Image 1 (cartoon, protein in one colour):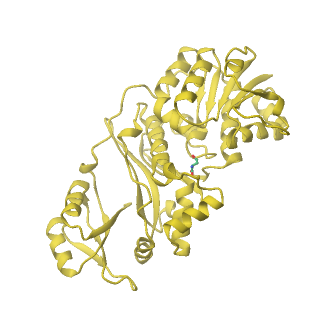
Image 2 (cartoon, rainbow, N blue to C red):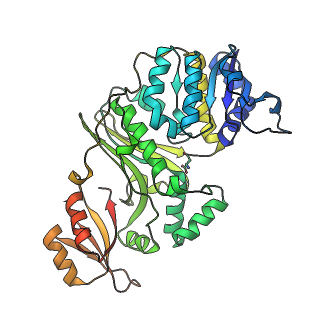
Image 3 (cartoon, protein in one colour):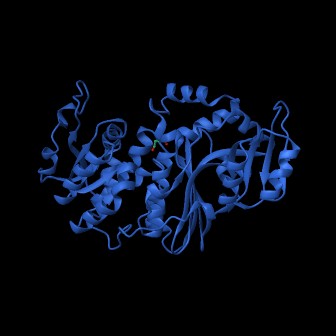
Length: 404
Ligand code: HSE
């Protein structure tokens, strides 16, 4: 029988304990032995909870318990989680985590530590919640060069963008509704500013390249500037707006970014609505593949954690290849990238003519009901040239990149 501990009895941690209990027979059969939760670490007490007797408050109760071979970390945060996880790995315990902030910041160090102590450090639930994407990248797509990753990696913002598009509602109204429904946190900054998606695309890029892609190098924009007017233009263009973490992989660098983008309605990611996530990959042999599902939530995320626990029960020793090394993979300078842009301008045809001198021909859009402004779409221009034009013309009110 494998005995495990869970650090952090919040939404995901309690989901892990629930799944191990509810699906006990199936899990025992598939893992090859029973998996029992021996201890739960949390600062709080849980009176009335069926597992309240398992709760401990001191990490040493887990670290020095030789019977515990696997520890699940679902506490969140970076520094304390990293410290506790390091202690567990150093004591020869495998660690499973859903904590993308910790994995993005300290994954290289923790992977190395796990290898040193011949145990596993696995983190399927850190990207895409319950969607099996990391295991697929590690085990199934290994014969291919992955060339591009486009991911809708944040459920909160995808819910908000879908509602803004479908209902014509404003950002504040939709955020409030998302908070009431429990999709958005009381402090939604990490989601709406794109920081959550940034950590996730950095993790995926690190797995694919085998080197450390630092989330701090990834240009990140959120959805706080998206308006109902943007949605009106998107509809006019037969497109939808999605917050996307993207990474285009070259031999010696990646072009990684998080930003809202306008997708043609025919694109597979355009059909990913509400709180769902999806990861669209392009690789040299397989071509295009998409992984779709619940990117957040108690049981979907806990499901991925439990499957990692089952993997660690069956394969407890360090794997030959480090998922990624501490060598840094450079992120290309954004200014060099070329793409098309949509912009709302506070002006008329004279301004368009002026801008065409800098950006080449522009496609002009006039949406009924939006007076005193125009939409323009550029041909392929560099980020640097577009930024320069934007700085020169304060009449450019907002801009969104096109995803093609
Ligand atoms: N806040 C995240 C989301 C949860 O909305 O997708 C999962 O990481």
